[in-house]
Image 1 (cartoon, rainbow, N blue to C red):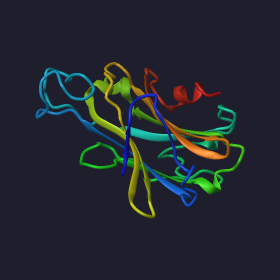
Image 2 (image 1 turned 90 degrees about the vertical axis):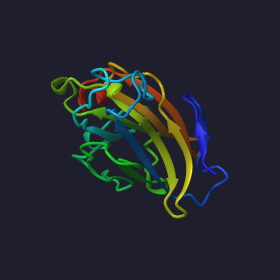
Image 3 (image 1 turned 45 degrees about the vertical axis):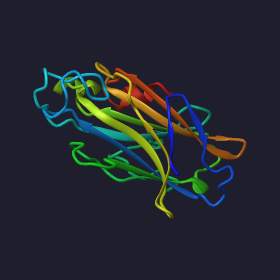
Length: 205
């Protein structure tokens, strides 16, 4: 049975589950549209008083950290660099609109193959060209990050991001990290005003 997390909660992934060698990290979101109730949506409000918004291109990325820092440019995995140099992290590719149900972008992580030098993987979603398009996460609803065992198709945990992220353009959704030789997941759900991935990555240099 899947465990629904609240912001700030953590869960063991591999402790007591030694056979979990690979995980699928699914990230999803929906643009707010005319059918949404006025003033509602999980992210606290409609943009433009309920008028249908333009397509919002959200991009999921994962940052591989060594001692909580990014060391190599290749340790940023996103639509422009879909596979880590070690081969343990693979990105599914870009989804330009967020339309449809289920995962919008998927990142596969082979836990057993992540080199020991990496202590943490941070999962981020940002809005492409947010400044030029004048878009923010107040125009997005139903955002989530979930972790699935791809062998059994079982959803292990899910974190629905329900804060008001209006005016913010990047979400640090969650992270998996090593602790005493085991992998854990931390539901973060913090928003920032970073305008692009370069600004996001700068936080970890």
